[in-house]
Amino acid sequence: MRKITYIITLLSIIAINSYAQQAPKDSVYNLSLQDCINYAYEHQDSVINAKLDVQSADYKVKETIGSGLPQISGSVNFQDYLKAPTILFPNGKGGFQSFSIYQKYNNTFGLGLNQLLFDGTYLVGVKAAKTYKELSARSYTRSRIDVNVNVTKAYYQVLVNAEQIRLLDANVKELKQQLDETTAQNKQGFVEKIDVQRLTVQYNSVVNTHDNTLRLLGLSYQLLKFQMGMPIENQVTLTDKLEDISLDPNIQDISADTSFYHNRVEYGLSETNLKLNQYDLQRKKAQYLPSLSFNAQTSALFQNDSFSKLYATNFPSTYIGITLNIPIFSGGQRLNQVRQTNINVIKAQNDLNNLKNALDLQASQARINYTNGLQTLKSQKENQELAAEVLRVSKIKYSQGVGSSIEVTQAETALEDADNKYIQGLYDALISKVDLEQAYGRIK
Image 1: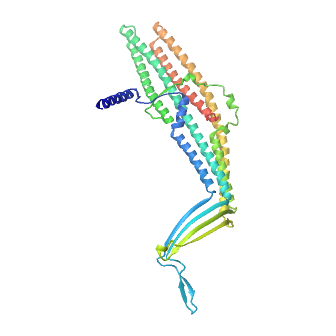
Image 2: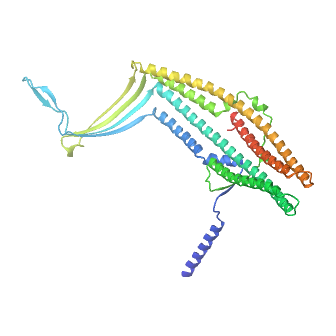
Image 3: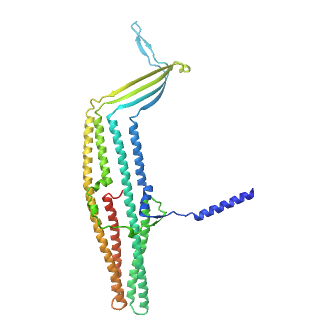
């Protein structure tokens, strides 16, 4: 038995150690842009809460419908008259005699039923509750769109920062090689020390920019994980590349869509809000209508002057009835409520019209920004290529003794500036692409 126990313990230890060696310390994700968006749909708190609001709205609809279903209630009432109420009767002698119709102990068990037969406010309320659920569903869609946009922009930020790191790596490598060659030439007396100092200053500046950008890249990854609702300590590797992103300069198809605002979730929310105000107006008007309900009650009364004999005899009673409630005069309250609600309907309609104009303006602005962004990116790309060519020629001239080190340094600075402007132009173009798709309701 001891041998068997020893073997089992040994195998358990080996299994645990093997699992510990295979289990990763942190989760690692290889994600495309769509993977990041899908992850955010499942884990971002704003989307989760919006989804919960949809469920809550569904319960609200069922609650409203339930108010028109049969309402059944039970009751139990126990009374111990320490001093029973009395009634006075004439005694025929010019005086009065007291008499009580109550027993000392009374216990009543009742069961009641109430069924709404007609109520105008109830019918409108059911429609309004369903529209409220629609409003929650649209809010959920808006949360998904917002998360989609935020994750996409954060994803592009990481890609752009990585591209900037790639360019800076090339610049650092190039400057380091040039600095080493110039330093060697200075030791041999072919170049002046000031040439080495100029390159050293420029090299240190590029290295500093490289290190700062590298830290910003780490921050960009954290921002992406935050927008996704992912724990910051998780490791993420992006599978999409900048060259995979299509920056289509042809936006004629988008511009031709004049009814795009119907695709915007904000417009749908405003329409739903207008519909809710209209239902509220109908509900206030329905208060002028009578309401009809059916009610029934059955009960059993136990009473006796002796507690031990309280349940010896019961006195049952049952009734059914119909209640008609006819509103006649409310001091003008209902009328003024209708007037106030009607104003809310007019305001909601004005808000809807204003929103359409705002969406038109936003779309025009997004279209212009995208066009300008593409043009700027193209220009900055050409400038970057020209600056690289100028640097190449400057180095050749300097190596052949027909150029100065200042010319090379200026060319290096111009290339670095062109790289920075290209990176900024690339980011602006990508962001304007996302804004354009959002403005025309292309992001669902």
